[in-house]
Amino acid sequence: MDINTPRLLRTVSSLVLILSVSSLASASLKVGFYCSTCPSAEAIVRSTVNKAISDNPGIAAGLIRMHFHDCFVRGCDGSVLLASTSGNPVAERDNSINNPSLRGFEVIEEAKTQIEAACPQTVSCADILAFAARDSALKLGGINYDVPSGRRDGLVSIGDEVPQNLPGPTLSADELVTNFARKGLSVDEMVTLAGAHSIGVSHCSSFSNRLYSFSDTSTQDPSMDSSYAATLKTKCPAPPATTDPTVPLEPSTPIRLDNKYYEGLISHRGLLTSDQTLFSSQSTKEIVLNNAYYGASWAEKFAQAMVRMGSIEVLTGSDGEIRKHCSFVN
Image (cartoon, rainbow, N blue to C red; front, top):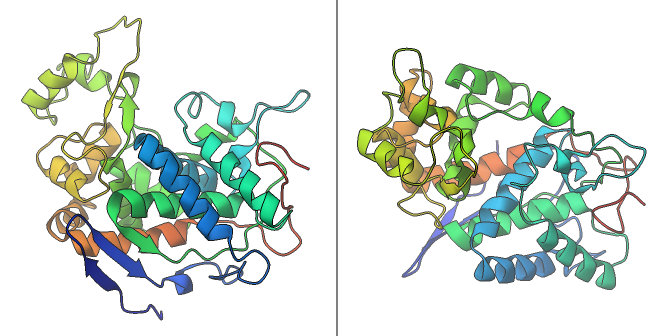
């Protein structure tokens, strides 16, 4: 596997990791796909994403999560962006797993509008989303990498396929390994991509069972640090709850994409069951330790894993279409 040597550029505030990892992607995708047909495409996306994140840092986590949710259901084809329409099944974005928690649709639409003005029906929404996820990682984590492009947009979006494909917050490590393996991703890539949970928030309902109704013998999950659990209880109401607040997935650096997430797991401060299980399980514990101790190595692996994820079941060539609007097929 031919990967260019990464260049680490240290600045006062961030570590910028620039990688050429195009050989990790599908052979049908290539870096610089739009160089001749729409040379401003990636710059337009980056400018749009940077402005959105400057206004609301939480958008970065939303865009990375949206790319993940897109790729795991029907491949990276922009199907998560399609709106529900009369006479068709409820779309992915309106499944309860995605709605209302998925964020950033307006950022993708804004970038698409600007790109359509410069290069009509040339750049796919699926590629715009892949670029936006990369630019989010750069903005909040200093993690930069080349995104192979050439994806085409899918024509179908079915909400019922979301729970069939996406890993849930209560899965065990073994179940996560199986879920990611079905998409062609390794155990190391799964644990490394979980580091995206160093930014973003979770609704209390996704983990409140760990605080109030864990098992018949223990109301609170004994694998959770007790002081952390006490703090969470001040923010998440006990059942029957009438509200569903959000809390940071990783509270120490909630708007910095870094390896603090893994340090939290070692301290038994993983928020979701699917987070803490990565340290509890012998099959993944060593990867967690390595990612916690070697931040630059984790950042490099994260970039590589994002490229690999971005090549899942892509449509290329004459398959699919290039949408004029990301929310609707042509």
